[in-house]
Length: 391
Picture 1 (cartoon, one colour):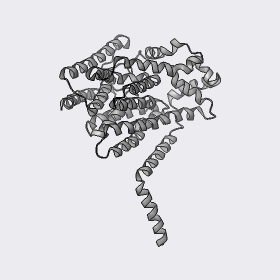
Picture 2 (cartoon, rainbow, N blue to C red):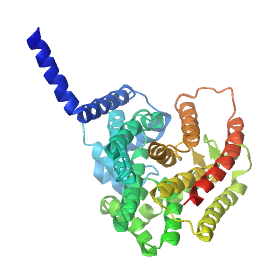
Picture 3 (cartoon, rainbow, N blue to C red):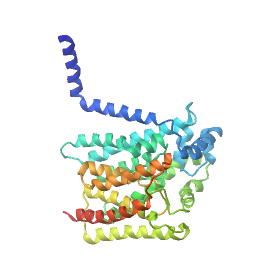
Picture 4 (cartoon, rainbow, N blue to C red):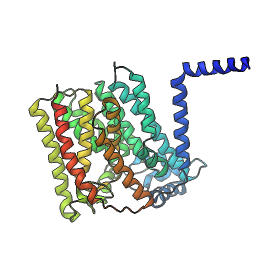
């Protein structure tokens, strides 16, 4: 018995010495198993869009089919789908595997960003690893990829990495990563006002850095262009995507248009201009007050801008606040502030995701959530402005 206990103690000592590695391995495996349990779910988007796209690509020769690929996703994502058609795997599992790989890229990006934000602080590595674990187990991250089969984690990962290199003042790398994000999803645009404001306030990078974004997009579209996809089709796909979604002021998303319901054809442009005006007012405020932005304030500004943009922009979907939700969680992990805001947007995501995926009826209308949310955001904005003005 003593020999057994001695062996057990040696094992436990070894685990204790390498506890970080063991816990990281445990949570990684647990996150994979949780996602695998959801792989059999076929969402409406999978049935109506992703599966037909995949089957059409496969039926027409995989990469060869990129010359006239179906759907309104940009060429880089469709190129990855074309690659998956060569594998002898069920389309549902192929597509979701790609999404889950995006989840782990997102977790890694979160680790990198938090490690930079906490540079030189106590328990720096602990908080970075905590970010990796927490992001992997966020309900909306799990549902988005392994249940829904979406790729929001992919474009968000590159935004986080871009932010990471921005803080390190490696601006060319930061904008290359922004370009990769743009190549996967138009929703990268919600982080763009933050970079524009930073350009004006800090003057540490050139306006020409923004040209890197479309150049990177073009490079990532080259496989499809080489296969025969018209150049103009690749460069204008997001315009076609936007015009196809302009028939409703809101699409299962809790924002001001759940309160103010009107004709989308009349108010969509007005809503966009109103939102741009909000960004301009924020820029004027920071410029006039000469507010200096440290890493904490930069992360808070980026998060709050995305929340405001999606609240006031028309034609928003339930997944469009995904970047803001992740940045908000990382902000709270690092600084333990504004937790109620992060909680509200996370709960909203769960409500809208659940409604879309399972069509569960709710006894409360979104109207009754959007009104108190607007009031709360107004109060929270006052507190956030106070935080910005602190030295």
